[in-house]
Amino acid sequence: MNKIQYELLPDGCGFCAKINGQNVGEITFIKIGLDKLMIEHTSVESGYQRTPVVLNLVSHVVELARAQHRKVLNRCSTAQNIFIGHPEFDDVLLMNSH
Image (cartoon, rainbow, N blue to C red; front, side):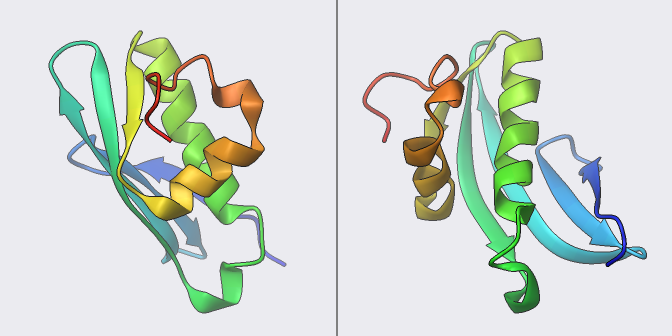
């Protein structure tokens, strides 16, 4: 299997997962003020749904939030499931957002 590359979207409000230049997944968020961001949507091509792509997309958002000292709100059920299963991300999660 080819290596999956993760890139910040051109508008800076999300990440995409690519294999051989083709998008296989994406996570989008909006920045709220200087200290929050809200995950709006996560999507992954059907052939990659049972792979670490979603976890890695969420992980990239978590790392960005940490680097920018932001808390994460979550409107996306797919990302919410990742947060529930990964307490190591709780430091960036805004209380009661999942």
